Image: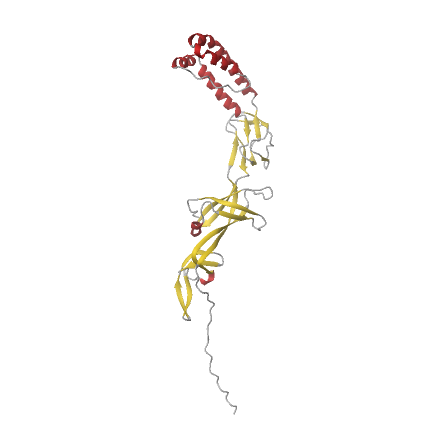
Length: 321
């Protein structure tokens, strides 16, 4: 006998969506990637002459740093020095032997050959050979082996310089294969070294993002924890795609500073932040579905729309259309 309650009219359900008015402007985008640091120059230190390795001004050990122009190693050169002195002595004897003939046959050239003879010093490189005034004079010097002896000595002087190896840049030894006291042969690999004042970061970039990066662009580089930062410049882009990762490598030049050193092999974050997409709109990335579709609201009706997707970041998408 209980009274049946009156039924209330069911309220119409209303669905709400968050919407944003379409507004185009110039949007800044950013590409972030991690790369590995390496030296721009990795060189093997090899011997072009034979002899015992003697210590230079730098300790020949792994991890030892050096400056450009430092004497890295010496190779025993006393025998080569004495042979060069003997060759110069014989050459002076040859010049002295032809001076009487030059005085008679080429009197106009006599004074310059006397001056050349007097300028020769055993301990110093040979001065420049006097310029011949005629073909007859040139034939005369060639017949007396003066030209052959002169250029043989100049070649020996160049070879003697190879007994001392100087640092071509600021760097450090990464591997040492021969110790001081060992005997090096021609072509012997003594050590490997890298340049430490010019480094580059190899950053793999996804193929669809490579078009936003150009040579000369500024790059912000940080450590993984963000405690140290550097400013870099895009030096070059590789002209091929890595088949394994489907990425293209971008090389960023970096320079260390006294309070902010860089080390080969470390991994760093690179941020390419000077990207500008003109006449575009930035929306949440999860508003994109089926790669290039969004919902729009027209007259309170939800509709599907195809758009142009220019750039995807971790949280947003930059679109038009």
